[in-house]
Image (cartoon, rainbow, N blue to C red; front, side, top):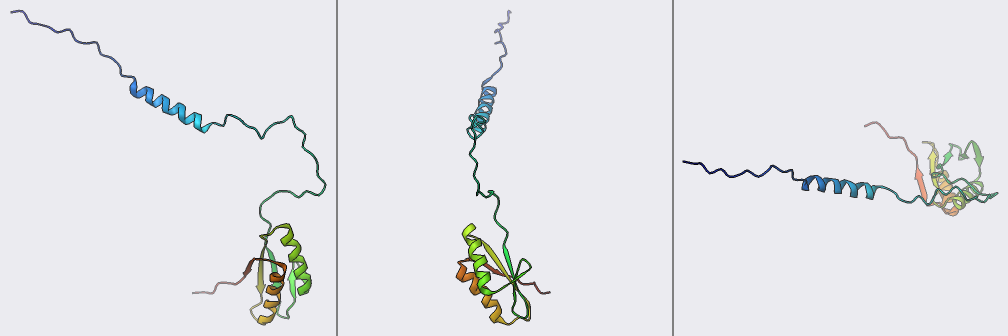
Length: 137
């Protein structure tokens, strides 16, 4: 009895999954690539300015130390409330969000702290902090 044999199909490779992965990689690299770099044109000459200031991070906070006798000390200089106000007003004009920290001695009368805070208020300082030392639990 003769046996019927069916010719087997040739094995094939399914490339659909590999093409999907390749297309996804191409789209990923296209989306992550910057095609045009406009800001780095070397053929222009920038103008010079005499009174420009460097663009940098935020300015440091101004620390006002209030000593026991009521003296206001800023950057190792004793200032009057009016002098402190002028300094803070000038700093606020340069940077509107200027931060000020008032550090008072533990034994200083409260009115001296209020002189420093009043100078900050009159100068238009809105970012004001009072320094303290955390106690032991």
